Image 1 (cartoon, helix red, strand yellow):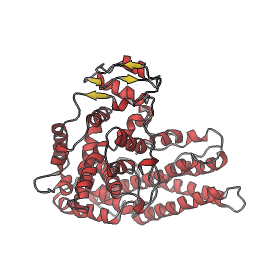
Image 2 (cartoon, rainbow, N blue to C red):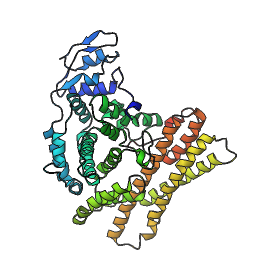
Image 3 (tube, rainbow, N blue to C red):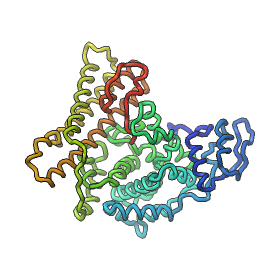
Image 4 (cartoon, rainbow, N blue to C red):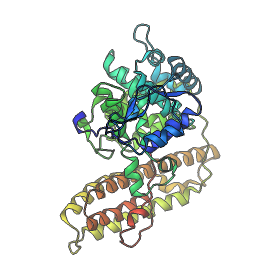
Length: 448
């Protein structure tokens, strides 16, 4: 696995270096060793403080050593800081007690965070990653807590897996430091932007190996934290057991870390895990349900109906489905000039699309309008809330299929790529446009 990963480039990534400079305005970051360019000329001396001036001197050079291993902060995220964040998260999200209520001897998940070992370079990298957004540290810690909880139930007393989940959870998004912040902040991405964003697990795994010195299990967890068992994850579209145990656990934990933050989290998680079986390992899903069952029984969730027009949402989903069906029929017509390569890819995605369509129909939300006069206000409110959850999950699955086509289109010749992008646009809800060389910019995708 590690041999297939790219190496950190000799020339500093401008987005990473700018994030380091931004953090240096808040806390001291210094060069831990002399910096030489690829011609052997020393351009900066050890001990120099990182600043905008350092950025200007470094950014135009190829370096003997990557800048990532040559910087150090005196204030990396401490065990005490990670514990504080973890305790805040557990206090605010009581449902996590079901997942994180374990101990191995005297060790608890919070203790794991307080004592996880990392090098000086790794600590600096994590500090820069946490500084990127206000929620970055909280998301990382939440993901690590959930991953450790699932790992403990799945492979009790497996210290290597537990360590990989602790470090993998904390570091899983460090690759985003290499991505243009404008891309990270965008609500919708063009295909070219999406392909850039989708590289962050690969970059993160390379940083885990070359900067942090993490073991192979932790590297794979970071590389695979957006892979799904059904093959519609990224960056490698792996399926089932081709994803490592650590990758499967961290992928599920990453999904749950977003859902637990939302109102009525139990209900959202329940719908998300049921609506499309096969995305995650069934045994892991069953374990999560078991871990949450007691907590859910004790909780009283407040269900708030969405303000959006549910009927309009139903209509929107049906239109998107119709658009996909139309483009599929056109591309697969015996008289179409579609190449065999495209037909194989479209057929594979369409099979998965048919499963999404079936899942949507099975929920019954399309018939909600018929129930308006037959339910009392509480029942109607709950039905509308469930419908909102279903729409979100269905839209997310269609988006995943669209992203898969975009990634495959990026590896094909122009005509084949345009055919795939037409279907990708329909899946993402983007209006169809004429097939031109600029069509890549007309498919809007949501970052995950």
